[in-house]
Length: 82
Image (cartoon, rainbow, N blue to C red; front, side, top):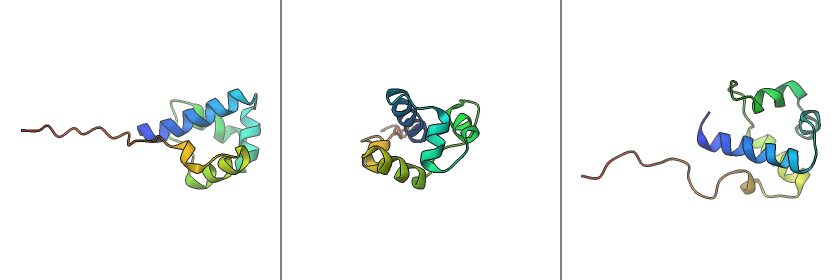
């Protein structure tokens, strides 16, 4: 999973905890089963949220889809300057 994908997973997880929601509740918001949410929250899985999921979360929580991604790029420049 990329850093930006992990950021989104972590953001949704924190929303879930802060709002005292279950994985089933989160699944209901975006129209998926609890098992899919469990898979996303598992570090061993490649499952992740997509833009449609983020849009549904933003609507439900009264947030902007922008809130679900970091303000700056998560890509670090690996090209060394010579």
